[in-house]
Image 1 (cartoon, rainbow, N blue to C red):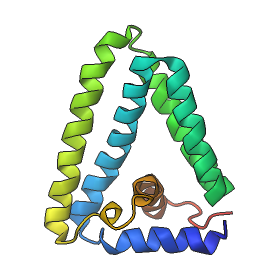
Image 2: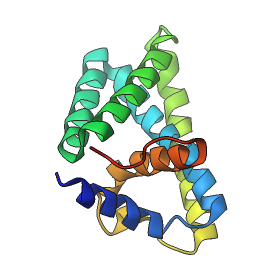
Image 3: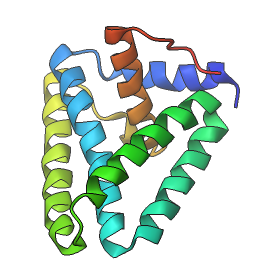
Length: 148
């Protein structure tokens, strides 16, 4: 994919995430949702979690190598955290609570924003959210924001 298209998608996503409270909420809740989804997949099987990770990384690789690398690192760290719990029957309830609370947080953020979530116009923006959060963190803490 042309990186200018990915940058345009992130910029479009940013249009409904200008309020500082909403931005902060998204910086917490978007990774929490990804973490919860990965945890729910892991409760079914490690193989399913790995398949989900690979599918996501392939999607991000089609956007940019940098996006795929960033997401691969994030997903591997998240899976490693879930694997620390050992027995997966403890994970499902925790992951479900994280998922629900994080989505409630997202909608509270959009209440402050006064704008509807981007994914309501295009489901692809569910996958762009994590890249938006990464771009915010890079902007705040330094780092290359453009994608190659």
